Image (cartoon, rainbow, N blue to C red):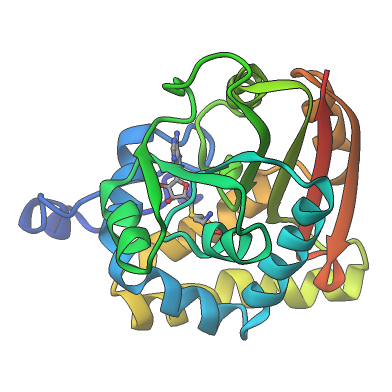
Length: 252
Ligand SMILES: C[S@@+](CC[C@H](N)C(=O)[O-])C[C@H]1O[C@@H](n2cnc3c(N)ncnc32)[C@H](O)[C@@H]1O
């Protein structure tokens, strides 16, 4: 059967591991299932990231932080901050700014705190507990793709940003060059689930990863999505051959 439902284990596993069971359909991304999935991999998330990206995730975050540093923002929210690697990189380049890490997974945020992230807030990106115009910069790395409603999430981001404030979205994308795309697809769908399973014990989370990347808009489509939901001047910067793209935009 076509694997629309990612993360579903056998019926036996479903009943015997009821507490840990999650099932994430990359098309509808149920928030409860997404939260359970990240909760289940939180302790091994960083290790898996570093191994699966061959260490490139450090470079991606450094580039994102370099862009944000150029904006000299004073109050920044790092949304879907997870275990806080981007938050910590931002804290290094902007030591005088106030930076808040927000995520709806308590398990992921607990790791962020243990790594030294100063300010964490448990928050759902679709109902942010902050007033209008609270921040002058919002970053979200590898988070938007997992949120149930991308447009609604972008509108929430626009709401909590002041006028002319900055947005940075970093996420996976598909390389444009056909041969690179074919190699990447092989890696993503054949190797990542095996490696992810060895590293975290949760193969289904890494099946979901590949499928969610395929579903997620990239390039022009993402620029249109951003500009249709409260932002202007959206730009895209592909990195590492286009397996990751950094999008920036200004609040309308
Ligand atoms: C792939 S991790 C990215 C973590 C971190 N930003 C990084 O770069 O490693 C995705 C994060 O998005 C969070 N997330 C997904 N949906 C969310 C939502 N609706 N509200 C808040 N956080 C959400 C998950 O809990 C998870 O920590």
